[in-house]
Length: 120
Image (tube, rainbow, N blue to C red):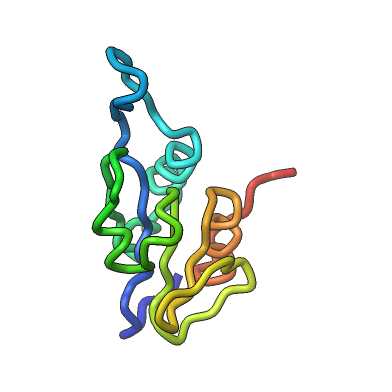
């Protein structure tokens, strides 16, 4: 994985544990964010190539809105630096592409950073 002067992609994940006000008295994790947490901890150097931001469950998710607008606050999201493209992008905001969902994010990171792919 090569390092360059391009700003790092932003990886938005839900907090590792969170509460949902609609389901009081329980703690949860997001299985999609957890898959990416596993990649971050297992693939050497991956975390150094990303700006990882863990976000609380409650909406509005202001930090996400600041980067990609209000239209889609679901997580996880990978927000690409301006001018960086990926065939896995499924949204755009102010000339920046973003990728939604754990599997598409992993595929995008394979294309962008050369991380390994999951065995079929």
